Image 1: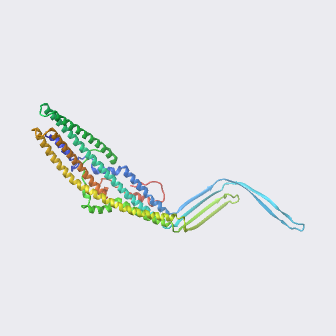
Image 2: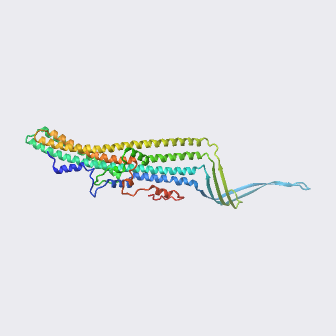
Image 3: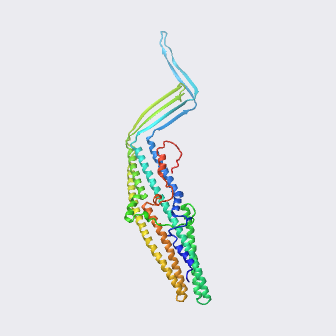
Length: 479
């Protein structure tokens, strides 16, 4: 049975849906969907908030350079009662000693003492711990930014996968719908031929079985499409419209795998995270060693009191002092030495983490490179398979019309063609996903590299807003 021209065009359009160069103006594009995910994805926004929280480590450590000022005030009411024993000595006279003995004097009353004071403390030297802690916090900020880049690329790659999965599943649903229509027509013609005695009941049963199988495949495809819609909604942030075709991003990738690996060692943010973690661990060693050095601080205080506590006779007092303190640690139980040894082990671990990160980058780039190359070849192979299956199906149908082929042969050829078209759609999907995966593994799945129509988030804006802040509890906008 020849395929109606309109139906054949529909099948070809469904099979080529992923690779059309142009799309209707109203269609959702891949770059537009990636931009939506970049703006609204909650995982990515949470990571940005995490970076802003890490930014605050720097002003917290810079506070070690600044004085600490405290104002104190005390006041209240007191009741005092004191009894004092007074002993007088005797006086010698010609008539004999006169006087001597003891007497008791009691003093009691109420007063309302009040005092206020100001204390300023400034650390002058603490074994370079403030400087090293500040540099450590800065390294942690850089590591957090690199982690943000990792999160951005993961979100964008997940958005690509969600978009392409939905595009693939939509094309497969269209193919399976068209297949069901063809099988329905096949069953109708088979029943007509059975009614005139050209085929047997077996041929009708085979057509009915193929139609039932086609409907089952259609239901499975629709279920997969529904799941892909839900995933798209989760990752992109809104329900999909009509999706436009997508294209690979090979133009952003080096032309050899060796160059891709070398570039990945430089640009992959996972490697940057490991490098900044080494810097932070090294500075943590210096902070721990600083606990063995002397500490110098100066403290100035002023206090004014009225009606001193514990005294009914003191009416007013004033105290002022400026004192310097030198502390030289001699032995603190050994904990400081343990911390130094522990921080050195952590530093060694972070260096090994860097080697692990580089190995993972190399492996993922080589693997993605192989998937891209296989995807290119797979598209050519499946397209050739479709062409051959179409020729075979048309030939078998013509042979069946003259009795040289059975209905089973026609149905088998039809299913082979459908499978080949599904394979083309899947190969095109895999080719584009592999292309974006390779770009992400290199570390270049960046909004600026691929040209996303979106305002790029700038983490350094919030950092500069809070770095030198001496006071204030309001969170800046940070964008």
